[in-house]
Amino acid sequence: MSTSDDIDSKIRDLKDIWEGKKTPPPRACPKCAGPMQSQYYRGKVTWVCLHCGKTTYGGPLEGFSRLSNSKKIGKYFLHGLAFSLIILVLAFAWIFATVFLVLFGFLIGLIVALALLVFMIGGINTFVSGLVWGFHMKVSAVSIFLHGLALSLVLLVVGLVTIIPLILLGQGFVYVLLLDIMLCFVYGFVGEKIAEYWIE
Ligand SMILES: [Zn+2]
Image 1 (cartoon, rainbow, N blue to C red):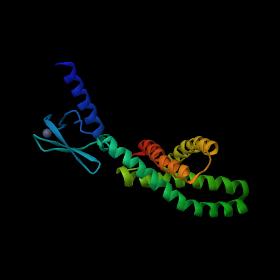
Image 2: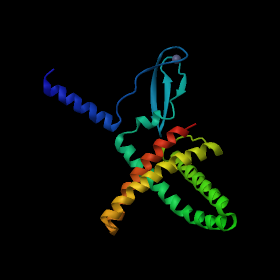
Image 3: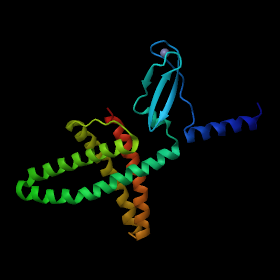
Image 4: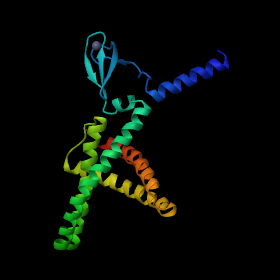
């Protein structure tokens, strides 16, 4: 094979990886050890035995790994946008609740308000992850709280990092808009990666 053919095939491989066309390694049927063929539909992967017809389901992340990179990037944006919009709406309710809790409960009220916020963040990301990626999420109170806690800590760091350019470069409308659009990708990426730990 000449060098240019070699480069061509490498480029084709890269293009296939980018577009998610790489076929997964073949799988042997657990019943008869025959060859299985995979089917991909709406984020779910199903394996069907060509010999005996036995059907098994792929893992929760198999559908995700089959998505093309361009699809993933689009979905990251969608995830971040949905997450931001829902939290924006719920933030008003949370602020009212916090004022009430702190007025009547002081420090304990504040702790309850923060726990509520963590639950809210975990709950929203659980909902959005199911909606955007088709993940089956753990929905117990403990899972949602821990999920929310992990995401809150990462978002706190992201928030602190993004405040720095905002202070340095000013707060022009276009700049804030561009930053918000960029943040949707970041929130979506972070949200999806953390959600993977709480998939059922
Ligand atoms: Zn079989």
